[in-house]
Amino acid sequence: MILKIRLYGDPCLTAKSKPVKKVGVAERMLIASMFETMRAQKGVGLAAPQLGINEQIFVVDTGKDALAAINPKIIQASGSEVCEEGCLSIPYLQVSIKRAKDLEVEFIDENDHLVRAKISGLLAKVFQHEHDHLQGKLILDYLPLPERRQVLKDIKDGIYTGKMSNYECTRA
Ligand SMILES: [Zn+2]
Image 1 (tube, rainbow, N blue to C red):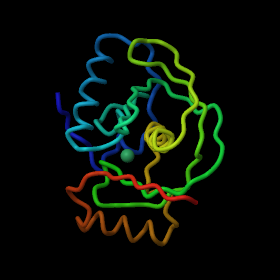
Image 2: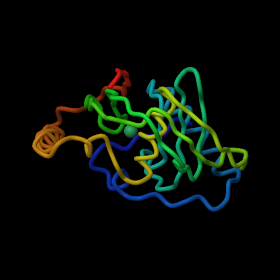
Image 3: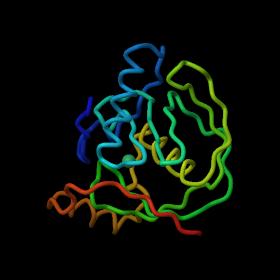
Image 4: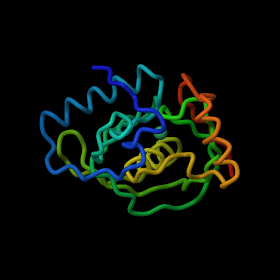
């Protein structure tokens, strides 16, 4: 089922999400809908708060790797790379963000199995972006204050509407 993506200004996007207690049918159905919604928008990642659900769940599909992560943790991070990132909840906005290149992560998958993995490249970038969503952190928060003020004003003025998210990576 394709769900409605919440846009910037929705309080769910800036709230902290709660850990999931049990992975059952409801969670698996939500994950299936999250994949469907993300792919329909040609996104590479989608977090539950973007659908108005403040639970620690996100999905990623880079075209090469796909995963669903429940209660994700970043155990270790190393290296750095600057990436132009967009977000389905803030259409049109692109922000250059310095992220770790390599990660060691832990999460529960949709089959309730604990996964510990080393990831890198686009998968690691998206993992960090979606992990931020679960803390209520958005790409806007990486902008220096004067720029952030301008973007917030532009959002209020309705400049950012209707475009898909997009990731392009460049070396730091
Ligand atoms: Zn996002």
